[in-house]
Length: 118
Image 1 (spheres, rainbow, N blue to C red):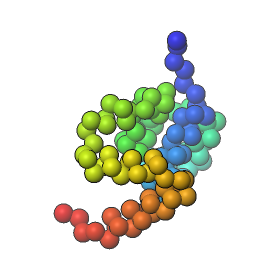
Image 2 (cartoon, rainbow, N blue to C red):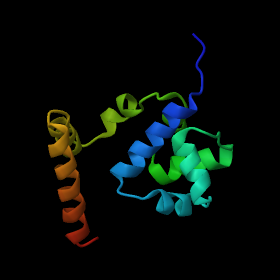
Image 3 (cartoon, one colour):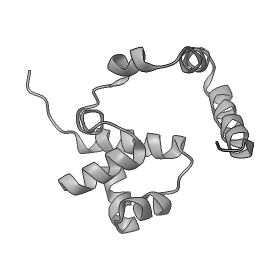
């Protein structure tokens, strides 16, 4: 079976990760050094991307290129690397309703922002 690049699906994956990180489209465009309209077009799937843009997105969003382009979820391979604490958090979130996942994410962001960094 031949794999294909679906720009709409790639844009959805990028938008989802950006929103999970709490970034606006303008903030993301600035992070990757691209114009906000161009970045918005990427999320809508109305344009393709250069390799450089893909690499910037991959780095900025901590997403593999395989996941951005083909939707191959790297979590299966990386799961072994998760600590027990991370695995427990992911398990709890997997079993929560969408509204509670959103609240949990906001609480985690607030908690981590309030914690001193080492």
